[in-house]
Image 1 (spheres, rainbow, N blue to C red):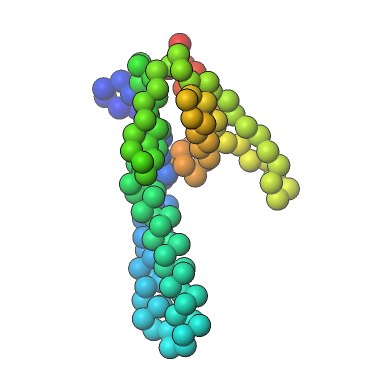
Image 2 (cartoon, one colour):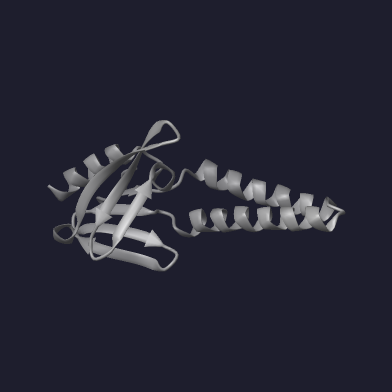
Length: 135
């Protein structure tokens, strides 16, 4: 998505984030309804997993931003900015469960790997957009 200030951002689709929170709420209701200790344990772990994934997707929005000066990657540890001269961009293609999966690899002083789920777009399209920003 383009921003008026001359930047572009990618993040997990908001519908998916909202679905994660709805599933978290449903699992909490299920936890209260469970009677057996084993059921409560299982559902409690499910609640924690849904809540952690949803919180990560919410806090780390937008996951990747690009502008004329470089890229910004957001994680639970905060935002990191790298100038274009410090960033190497690559798309990885791997076979998983019988299908080809793409991920975006950004190599700066740390290695950042982002998937379609993180970006809300095809990693190849994002890599092409980043290369056009780089110039």
